[in-house]
Image (cartoon, rainbow, N blue to C red; front, side):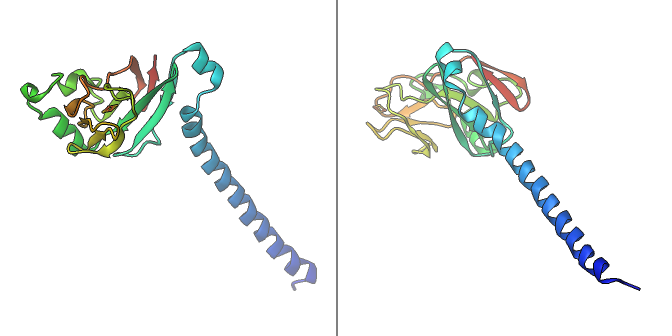
Length: 177
Ligand code: FES
């Protein structure tokens, strides 16, 4: 026969399990977000020292561009779609002002990732991602247009967005510098 104490205890235990599950969920979300945030904002001492910066690429969705600072310079890390990679690879080099094949601007086996400095090579403005006639970047200051490889295609900028020194530590992690 069920006592009053048991009928009270049972829902209490269920409540506890529910709360405990909720807490685990919250911790899981926090730990998933933290590496992303920590990579987006390396501490000031690291930046000032110009030390290499590691970046976890896992949270960057296809089609997304993430900004990071290294040695006080803005850098774009772009997770290119298959279409963007193909467009970048199929360009006729003779059509380019600063001819460079896409393969020379990415790391072998990681062509979906483009890492470039984030200031326009004209006068240093910050171009807007996924804009312009080539869906790469568009610089609103004087109209320079860059393709999905960061190469100058239209406007006054004289050269491509440069590629900073970086290396893949694994398929989902790079080190800049
Ligand atoms: S600074 Fe970008 S076009 Fe002039």
